[in-house]
Length: 136
Image 1 (cartoon, one colour):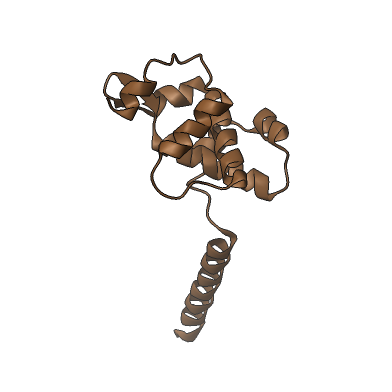
Image 2: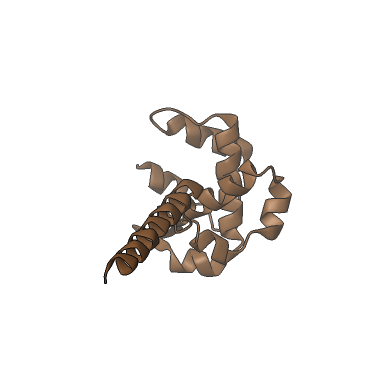
């Protein structure tokens, strides 16, 4: 029996117990996440569950079971991580996060990229101004 078949008996409304969560992490091959990462992932899942319309939009199917896609979890994780880095508390994050923020999490550029684009625009303007003043 596969792991998916073993855990597919759980309904959508049942939350896994602490012991079941530990068993799931023990079955996964590879490096297990540290406690901070595990808390952030838990918070990302809770934030994603807050918006059922997003879960429907980003749904993927694993056999007979419909699950939230990895893309939704990645977007939610990015949005939550940004707020955690700003020092917000988990309950505050869950209260304030929006579905738009989650969907836009991948499109926000870094400050470094914004500064670089600004420098390039200034250089282009200077070059175009120089060319217009140099032509007779």
